[in-house]
Image (cartoon, rainbow, N blue to C red):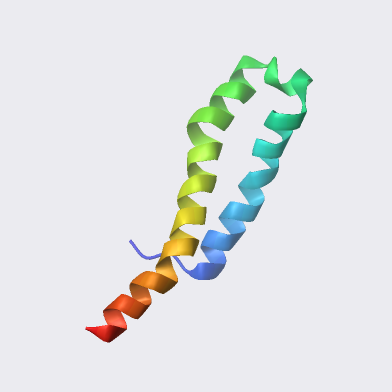
Length: 66
């Protein structure tokens, strides 16, 4: 599956505030559903999008060199 750079960047930027809210708001951390969603959905999504954005240029250079 191929995602555009713009889509990955927007997903990364849209989901990051939820991680920030989880880290800095003790009131939100007390809500079990919010905690579970951030830990099992939002954080992996932010991490995967960030890694894809970081690795994609290296993979493109490697493919171009072949």
